[in-house]
Length: 214
Image 1 (cartoon, rainbow, N blue to C red):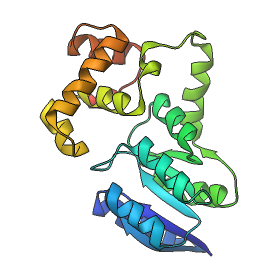
Image 2 (spheres, rainbow, N blue to C red; image 1 turned 60 degrees about the vertical axis):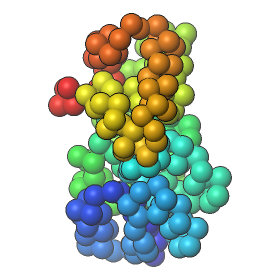
Image 3 (cartoon, rainbow, N blue to C red; image 1 turned 120 degrees about the vertical axis):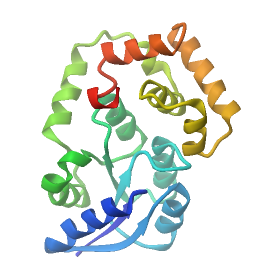
Image 4 (tube, rainbow, N blue to C red; image 1 turned 90 degrees about the horizontal axis):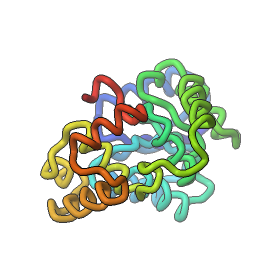
């Protein structure tokens, strides 16, 4: 029996994931969380083999959360389940300690296989994401501007180009408007771009944002 923890801020998503796993044999959903704080409390209190983790929950940057979880529970395998299909998110998630990366649109078909594989010690990535990652092999060896951003800066960058205001970003990340403004300034400086419009053009050029997020 594979014990699984679910962490997603949308109850309907958790319900759907639970239904998929419980409809298959050999899985037990041992606990659920809905933000960074409850996720940390859950992994501390409830033994499990796999954590299915939403990358963008309130209060914490998903990459930072993965690192903390692996520091505290190194044996816990993490399957990232996210709306972000961009390869840069996948690369950062794996570097932080994730064992699998699955987009939510693929979950209904691939979730059971993904959880089974990483619970057994393997690594899982969908075919579509693998193809995206393969495309990065053709990129210049020198780091692109967005690759020099910290995980938090990259998160803020993605939220800005997706159209979120500084106030909205601050609310979702549970930080001050001043903190987000500082991150925005650093993003513009590191990427050597003049304004938000330039950030959007850059994101489109390097396919760092989906069409439906514009």
